[in-house]
Length: 486
Ligand code: GLC
Image (cartoon, rainbow, N blue to C red):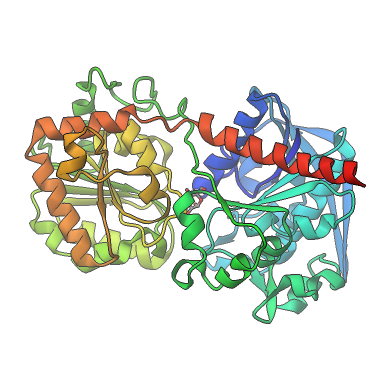
């Protein structure tokens, strides 16, 4: 299958969250299965700065817009050991600046133009560069207009994956009309999102298939509580949203061969984990107390991640026989919550930054991994932490519900328990879960059983990649059947 992946982020080039891990790992998995995969990204400043070796393709695309337009130079990554052809859409006036989507002052004001232009230029370039396209796979609002730009007829099939409905790319019509989106599309009913233009909304209406990143989230987004106003549009589709749980890159995340760790370890021999914990405590300036459990959280510091509950517990955290480490950056308000807790409480420490090495150290060195997310389309850290023998403590929603088995006595008895899952998004539920973890910590043999059950689980892309492959193939088969029937 000739697949074009349109992504606004992908590791190792540009990342703000789990989306980047998924677009990259999925592309590689599909290429490994023998498909032709081209991955398109905007050429952000941070990609230039990282010294990625980039070469020319000879392709230039003009994206017209009222009052001008843009000239996109299409470039390619020179080295690709993964079998994926990585292309960059280079429009310096749109992408050579700080921040993928915004800076300290908020979202970039021209995001509609930036991502409409990226999508149009990438589609045109893909057409000219390759030997045909079977499937265009879009991710989130940034590339969700692709099905509209492609139109119908003999256009390639389109799949839109929803990674997070909290981000929809909604803009006033006048803004979109100046953003290189032809007026007849910008003003069409397909694009209408409560009187404005919604990129994600349009993609939901027009993509041939919709997927999301976990089976539970696929059901949740049909409800007002998790649909963010799009539940009606999603429910109106003739088909259902397919939930495919993400995998993780098991070569990057492997406690037995992790170059970031002071000691490696495995399910058969967990002993190296103790040194990881000591190193973590030292790096975060916490007392070196092996007897206290460490709870770690690595996340974008945004509302979704449940920081309001942490804030509500506040000084109570200081009274618990435990230590807490927070790593991540995000919105000022939520950064302030963890920063202030860390200043006030000696058993809480925070690093307000994005740091790959420290992320690995938290995964390995913590005893419990905190994910009290209000909602979570999939979540990757709960899988990574299980692989690292670090027990996830989660709110049972979305992908968290699909990948963590609560340590009830019944689940413990059959060796299935892999974590702690609380229901109901409030501070008392989180308090209950923390106490549950502390009690589990007092039962070392049981805790080791939970750690090992998590380490046994398979989070590789094997199963998920196959589901996407089947989906793409099925789409093309219906196409062929339709042609044969004519
Ligand atoms: C978004 C979601 C997260 C998911 C990731 C990759 O960041 O918030 O739950 O794991 O996308 O699909």
